[in-house]
Length: 243
Image 1 (cartoon, one colour):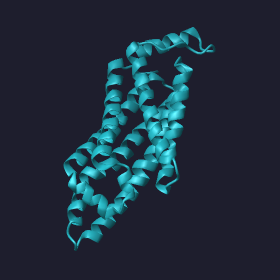
Image 2: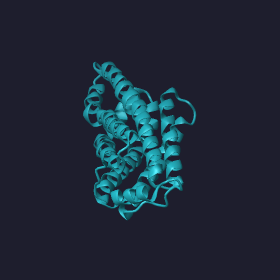
Image 3: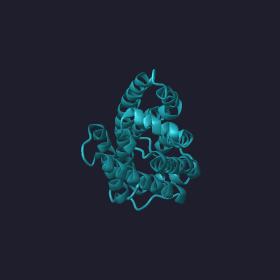
Image 4: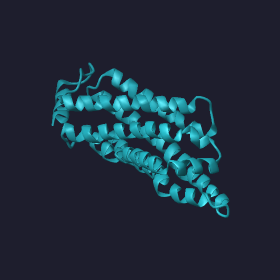
């Protein structure tokens, strides 16, 4: 049986996550030239980080908060449907939030110490090497590759599951498109042309898609159902979203 929840309770973490992630990304682009800065030599990145440490740490913390909010979002959205696919979506969404939060938290928790050490000639090579390892393991592999793949999988599952519960075709199609575009981000570490730009476009579309989900929840109704759905099933979906 589906466990219902109030529309506001579902909407709050989604709106907070979208605002946090977009504000963090824009802020980092302004003060740290992120993510383009990662293409520079490690010693230069650490020097730029240290010059704007307070601002960079604050923006990364906000970005990590947005990623962590994906955990309650996955749980609350999972209550809109009780199918096996949605239960898998909950697990995948939680995993996406965990890996992305861990990957982003390296900046406020680990990088400040490495940046300080990099200012000393005797420790510079060791600090930059550890910074490169952290970027590879926690950044490119865990936070980005795993994070993008899991976020795309969650979005794809939710979009297709909700399509059977009266949500409109444009919502399903835009969710699938966002998932595909986000998935292109796994090619960015290999410097494949256009991968980073397509990934960015995917997250813009994903943000709008998530806000559309909030709009449906707050209205307390589902849009016109598909022809093959029974009136009883559509009514049950309306009740779940209105509670």
